[in-house]
Image 1 (spheres, rainbow, N blue to C red):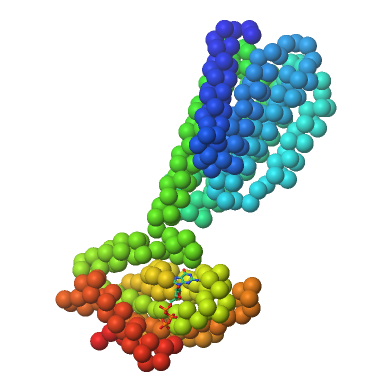
Image 2 (cartoon, rainbow, N blue to C red):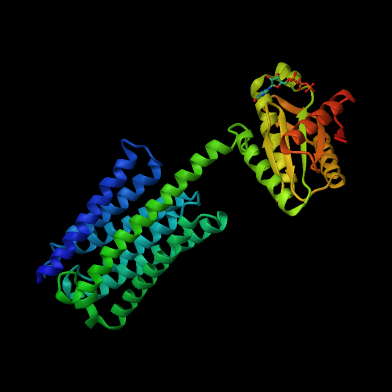
Length: 388
Ligand SMILES: Nc1nc2c(ncn2[C@@H]2O[C@H](COP(=O)(O)OP(=O)(O)OP(=O)(O)O)[C@@H](O)[C@H]2O)c(=O)[nH]1
């Protein structure tokens, strides 16, 4: 190392990557928090640590270990970072693209001897490959954000990945055009390289913090889903029904915009369980929920109310409109065939509709819909009845 302060900064980078590797590893064992994802983030930091450590041993002599291997291991770290993010945000893996970037970089690096004399060229290849990873990461985060627009954590990653992608790109191009910049941009042991080293420190700190925010956000969503989503059918559960009904009722009180609820119960469901078994019964419930969810308006919500009972909340919907929805759903059951491992199963349902009006509270509305639904049952099932 030529200058002590540059050496200290490289040591800080190594220390930060080591700490981050330990933290992410602790998330895998013993905490087991999204382990497949966290192991990739641990690997990403570990690779940066090894790469940076090898950089510190660079001398004027040619060394494949301290140049080529160190650079490739850092690129593998970026690939692991991208793969972890894709896994966390449930995006398709781009391992082929990642492998292509690494192999192309390695091939280009092999064209010159691995030594300081060719630092501008070697670091330029490394930077352009890194830019490829960060541009890909930006696209991944943007896609994840589009799929879940309320997730601020994902969006917050788009900005730093874009910035780092651009910086790596500019560095790569600058070194190709102006090899004289190597002392500042490519050699990490010179006084002139200090700003670049500070940027690396910011990069490691910033990326780890934002990814941690993303993981925490992901966990919070999972916990919230466990509390609000019915495990069997994947639709809202009764707990979230209470919350949604309360907020819809408040909206009605403030805006006077009427809402309706639609309660339906599968007909003779016990026969399905008795004939085909509970597994088929569960499959019927699952597919029923999916069909109904796919057929309703985006403003409406469907909840599992009880065993084979479901409830729809229809905001801004009067009784006439609610009856139309109920009849459409009833017809959907008549057309619907549930395909199970025991063969095709046909199921119908009985519907009760209730619409909010003055002097009716949310509790009363539920019992009105319940009564209307039982009227539908006693009228022969597979039909719709509205509360008066
Ligand atoms: N497979 C399965 N069955 C369930 C679940 N929850 C409730 N059930 C069954 O649903 C059946 C409901 O039966 P009943 O209340 O007699 O009603 P039904 O047979 O649908 O008859 P009607 O409602 O009068 O048309 C029972 O056999 C419950 O065991 C579930 O999560 N999975």
